[in-house]
Length: 493
Image (cartoon, rainbow, N blue to C red; front, side, top):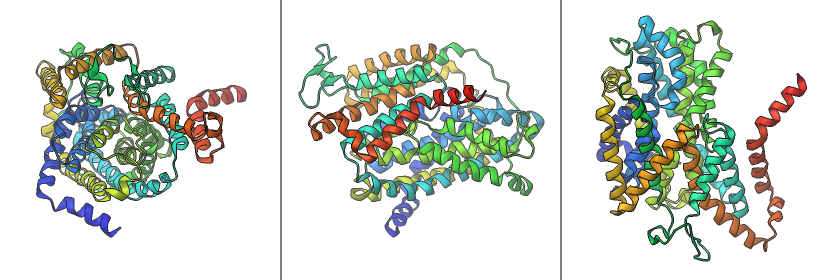
């Protein structure tokens, strides 16, 4: 533990890393404020530019984008009733009504304090939970990892509002994408169509840039002339003592909810914020204020969505299972820099792990200061015309994809997957299940093959392994629990 504290403390004593986190926090807040971007899109855009950095600095940049953009979505949610990120959608329910009453500064003060507490709490939990889970993960063999990845894929059923069937279809499509290239064991070519640049499969980075950044550009192109109604704000105010008394239980509850939801594979901050808001209303003594400007509603949503950021890093770093769309991008960053997620990461490169945790802690403290002193300035960024913003995003996406391997094929992949992502969104499919399916697809195939080798092709013997069986049960419940709940509800009715 002393070594862990020294590694975390070294972040606060490294001037270059502090400067890097400061600049990235500003970029993250800008990305979060701009409606239509968000943490996942921002991380996907910056991923190619982190490839020349040291591993800790690169992952610190991506993690900082994650936590700062998640908070910053609340700024536009409160001031223009448009969440800068999906995780801030629940903040609009009470943030904008409170702002229209002339209390925009108070609403933002509640949001920034609740977000900071949630983020710091989740990083503290991450510091303790990740090493403990890593010790358990030492017991994992191919059957356990195969069952775990199936559980992760089953959680795609609830990763977005697209619907269970559509989310699972997106995940299956992502798994199929993972089969492109040479089969690892036999070297048989699959879906390459004679293009040997695909021999090692699709590169994650251009696919992610296309799915998240380029498709968002095409979606937002339909709203070029959209005008936002802004609320005038004088200054951001810290919550009063009475406000703290009223929200502290809500914040504490949402910290626990957000961290727990974040740890579940494929859930993330959006689900956490909705549940945090719902529970805040359930336990409030003033339920009639919700939807009209309740500070408990803002605190519940914001503490939960930022607590989910640290929670989502737990399965990402320990098991290699993304906890959200953004951690899927961070997972790619870990792999590219040779930080292979898993239990050995916490024994062989433990200093780097805790330096990443320290960077997340510092980022949370930095956006506290920025939220209090610069929110009014950042709010003006939301007024940047889309005619200016999206050509810049397009150029960054193309440059980032080409810079990866100096290959025009990667640029074509960005454009192709931008169109695929756009068509998917247009027909009600979410792109996050496709991304998670692509990452988990290789793990599913490799661990299934290794499991069959262990049991001489007798696949049913995997169900005799207690830990694997537990994850198989979780996967079954993840897929069929909505139908089971509906069946019980009909029977009771």
